[in-house]
Image (cartoon, rainbow, N blue to C red; front, side, top):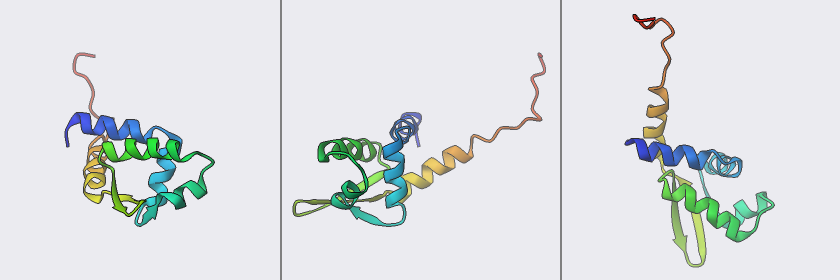
Length: 98
């Protein structure tokens, strides 16, 4: 996964509402109407949040008639988790010049 894709995912997840949405749809698929029931936001605001999550690739959308169903893109999530796991800090590494 390239750097800019990780940046977009981090930006998308930096919003508390979007992070909660990702938590809600983890392992399942939810209709936009069910998400709206949970939050005190308008439909256009939900659409904005979902656009951020789908644009970064973390969330997939499936249209059925006038309804939109959202789920986690597990391939992208796995790649992002691998990136985060690669950020381990090794406190034993010291700078020779210091």
